[in-house]
Length: 412
Image 1 (cartoon, rainbow, N blue to C red):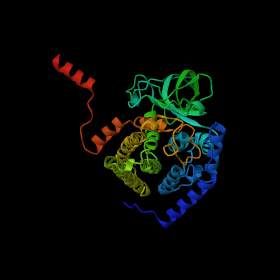
Image 2: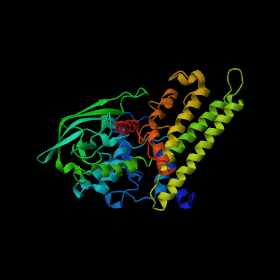
Image 3: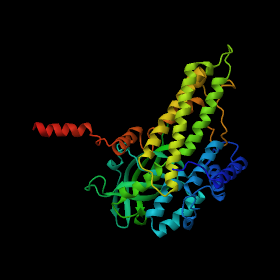
Image 4: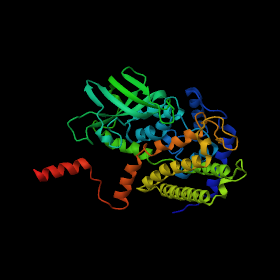
C-alpha cells in the first residue's frame, strides 16, 4: 500500500487548485440553468467523467487524479455537478450493460449536462431491502406499462431522465423478475412530489408516482428480468463514495471548530482552555486522520486495479457517524448561537469558502444534514451487517419474523 503522492500528482493538484481559484462560482447557484452552465464548465476543463473510457468521452484518468479533483473541489467549496447521478451511476452502468444505441443516445448528453438524471430505486417498503420492490411493469406489445411508486429520489424535481427498477415477473423469487428501464421524466404518467427534509429544504428530494406510464421496449437495459444484477453495478459506484472530498470537508469543519473554540467569550475566557473541550477536539482530529488514511488505503487498491472490499463499508460507516459527531460538538461549543440561522455574532457565524452551495448553509442546517448520510447509499445498520459478516466472520443476521416462523414449525 503506497500512501504517497508522486510529483506528477502534486503538479496536477496545483493545476486543479489554480483553476478552481479562477473559475469557481462566487455566488450560490440557484437556477437549473446556472447549475448546468457550471457543469459544462467543469466538463470542458476535463474534470467530469474523468474515469470514463476515452471512447465514450472520458479521460481514463487514474483513481488518484479523480480523487484529487474531488478533494480540491471540497476544499475550495466549489459546487459539484448537477448531474452527479448521470455521471457517477447511469453512465458507468450504460458503459457496462447498455446497447450501442443507448450509449450513443445518452452518454454524451450526460457528460455535457444536457440531460439531468435521477435514480428511481427505493420504495416506501423497499429501502434497505431493495429487492422487495413492488413497482411493476407489464409488457404490452413493444412497450412496458409502469404503475407504482418510488421514494427518496434525489434530484427528481429537476431531472430529465431516470433509471427505474421495476418488477416484470411477479411470480419469480424477489431477486429475480426485476428489470432495469430508462424513463423520460417529462412524459405523461409521471408525477413528482417534492419532499421536505429535516433541514427544511424541499427542492432536492421527492417521491415519484407512475400511472400507466408507457416506456418503449428499447429503453430496457440488459436482459428482461436481469435488472437486479445490473443494479449491483450501479450500487457499486454509489457506495464507492467520494471519501477524500468528505475528508477535506471535515478538515475544514475542524478548522472552524478550532477558530470558534479559541475565540474569547464576553468574560474573556476561551473554550479551548477547558481540558474537556480539548479532549473532544483531539478525539475528532484523530478520527478525521483515521478516515483519511482509510480513504487512502481504498485509493491505493484502486490505483492497482483492485476492487474495494468491505473496507468501503467501514469507511462509509465511519464518515457517516463522524460527520454527526463533528456537528454535534460544534453546537455544544456554539451554545445558543448554534440554534440561529441569522443574527449570529461575527466570531461565531458560519464561515465557509463556499462559492456556490451556501444558499441553505447555517449551523442548524449543517447539524441536521448528516443524519441523511447514515441512511443513503446503505444505512449504518446495513454497513454494520456487511462488516460483521464479511470482516468479522459473524453469522448472517437472523430476522425476528424468521425466528418466529421457525418456532411455530417446531411447536406444531
